[in-house]
Image (cartoon, rainbow, N blue to C red; front, side):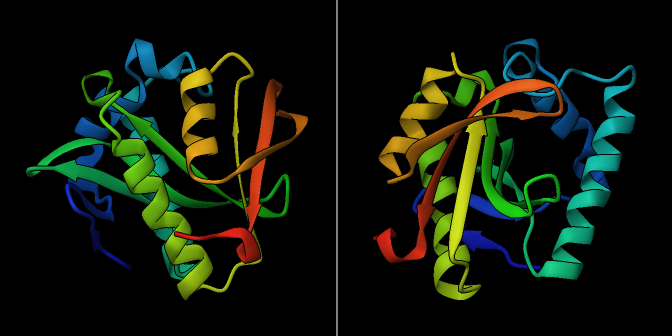
Length: 169
């Protein structure tokens, strides 16, 4: 499993010890409105997600990281294989206190760099709800371009992607 440091962040695989903090971020009302709905037990869902991410790290050599700033978890970001599309996405989700400071772009840039330069991926995508302009702005800053509308787990979404040949890191 890969741990990276950017200028301001530490990106490391989540462990079960991170589950409560992860659930508090991932299922925060201002965050979850942009993602799949919160389950009945967010802590249980956090443990399950962390297990899924660990499987990705073991099987593919990549997965989402916890995003840490000055030792405090502020979100998650990284690469995630999406079987429904047969492709890998770059994803991010931060606590609202961390919004608007460039952390999503910084973490996602590190993930794209890992995917294209280290893992030799050909294409990486990102999806979000059509009205999530903040995430679409991050996608555009990273060089991803809108390609199409898709439905992911019954949620209307917009698909942005970038090919390795266009990645400038």
